[in-house]
Amino acid sequence: MIQQRLDLIQKSDIEDLVRNVTRENAMLEFKQKLPGTSDTDKHEFLADVSSFANARGGDIVYGIVDKKDESGQNTGEAGDIEHLKDQTPDKLIQKLEQQIREGISPRLRCQIKEIPGFGDDCVGFVLIIRIPKSMASPHMVCFRNSSKFYSRHSSGKIQLDVKEIRDAFLATESQAERIRQFRIDRIGRILADETPVRLSSPQRFILHVLPIASFLNRERLDLATHQNSLKDLFKPLGNLNGRTRFNLNGLLTWHERPSEPSHGYSQLFFDGSFEIVFANNFVKKTLQYNDRNSTGEIPASALEEQVIESLCAQNKGYELLEVQGPFAISISIIGCKGCWLERRGGFGAESLLDSDVINLQEVVLEKLGDKLEFNLKPLFDQIWNAFGFGRSESYDQNDNRGN
Image (cartoon, rainbow, N blue to C red; front, top):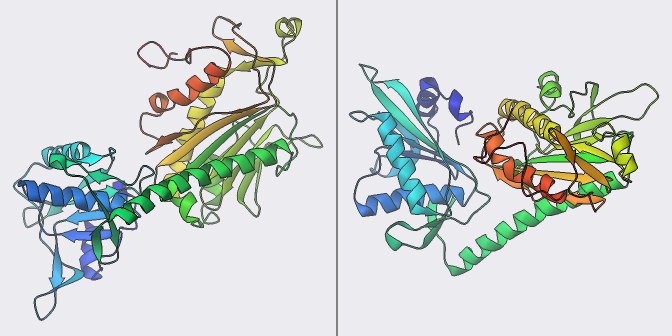
């Protein structure tokens, strides 16, 4: 994979591949020509794309010649740039996206970018397809009723046999289990007050964001280089400003109250996982609810807005750290049994929360900044479900978020 965010890759980065005689590997492949129009060519293209998704992800670069040795054999090294031309990049990208959408199951989202400015007239271009490591793997090539699975190693793509396919499905189940166990461990620690700072209330709202590839690979990110920027992008909810320091887990930011417990903290782990715990002041105390034996009122719509705002900031932070999606996002609510839900224009008089520990099913997003309000709705719906409502009332019937 080219070590650069896709949106920042420029002509000079492509030229560097040739200048440095970059070698293909499990996460990078060079193609001189675009996929052909025959069924065989289309199947080969889909096999290439799905093989990256079923392995570690990576980039396919179209417009680079594979360097040859003295005997005429391909070396796997970047040779000359043979830029693409005589095609409209936008239409080409749409065609390739459609082939990926219709020819791979389950559906796979890739990023495709044109790098312009090549040739004497500067109208030539190079095309990059960036394929993420998929949480939904293994992906099958289903074009023309095919049912083949592919993966990759350092020498290129391979077709999986029956045992390898079974192992791939078991690996996916293992990944989901590791995410579940991480949440269980963290929530257990928070319930037991094993938190990095003392919290002001047993009533706690918990947000977890896991960049799946970094989390599963246990990649240790360089947080120190960007510490000043990260502390403003990975903050506690509720605009709680405070102090920041490193601990054994990563970068901790907490709401500081002199000689008093904290109202919340955020913990950015070295592997990119992120945890926010919001305590005390997210539950309102009202006489109306005290009269009904309630323990308080939770302003769901306001919390939703804060989650959206926080994820927008985190998106910038992950871009700074060059961390790619997909991201698993989950919410937990603990210590709030007996609370009501605040509604716009009235009280949430459907039901009291009937459990002290609410763990919502996570949602998986390819990118944090892509249609965030719409993509988070299933998560927010679950909060309202817990209080007896059918859906989040922050959205209209067309799933548009209200003002």
